[in-house]
Length: 449
Image (cartoon, rainbow, N blue to C red; front, side, top):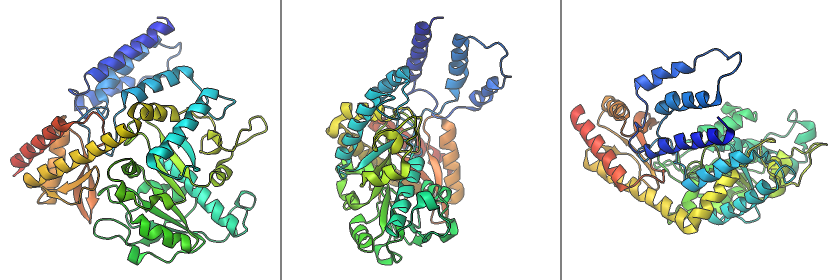
């Protein structure tokens, strides 16, 4: 089989997969999972054919996928893939660009610069900011917090690049009581001990309580949230950030999915967020690009570039080259699918998609209440948090819904008890899919009584 024929076969198999996505089990059954044992083979001596390898991946692998690219997946704020972003990804793979700098790939350098500019426009963040396209919110948060610490230490006259951390002035970190685990992970990797984090209390909705904010100073990094993972709530940025800056603190906002509310009619939820020093957000969540694509955004480009610089004697580049804004030196141009998504959607399309998801979340909330479930949050954006009358029933409903193969969402804990969490973030999800989800849950609830 020639290269052309092999790639055509891969595209044909991919299209067949997508054509059946709405009828595919949302989570694979036991037989499909058991069949994965076919991959447990020894390393071939002479190598197998490319066409047989592709067939194995599709025939055995495809049935064992979660249909997260379909309309019935409501877990983890996982967006589907917009066709334009998927098509751009296919061409991008064919190009096989190492998109570290202009020298490696002029087209990647140009398109990612445009994508970064468009992201700032769509999110209405300071236009002078640097935008680095990284693998995940975790990696991008790591970059942002490393830059924050370096900047605060530089203000104290400490050169962390040369002198390290031993003997350095202590940098304190204040986080929400409900801080996301990825922020904790980034802090842990950077050497901030978990027992030394200063915890800011939250109100009944899960927002940092501005009245109980711990003391801040010029040696403090304050981490806030746009879209708390369970409730979808937003910290009161307009109250807190000016107070933090008056004390000299650095403010970072974890906006993995919630930051995109800023591009919608829910803009008021993000009032004051543009005053922060750095932000992280995902494109593979609410913008519906392929995995993996996230962004680190820093108000002062020189601060991020200084922390992430990876110039070498054999490869130097401009300060704002992607290799000097992110953790990765060798990297794929993951900003290209972002460019494609934004070019096809436009400002209006992004707004309409986010607004539709928020509307569908409210429909789910109202339907769940009608069917006797206890909705636990205000449903300010696309997150619905709920439970049943007892913990046992909550767990039983989750197990039955997941086993049905018709929809998938996950569990969490809220205020010490099990709860269920529905996220609406797929461009494929329409009103009929939400109605089907509610009918399924009503049936399961009735049978579990």
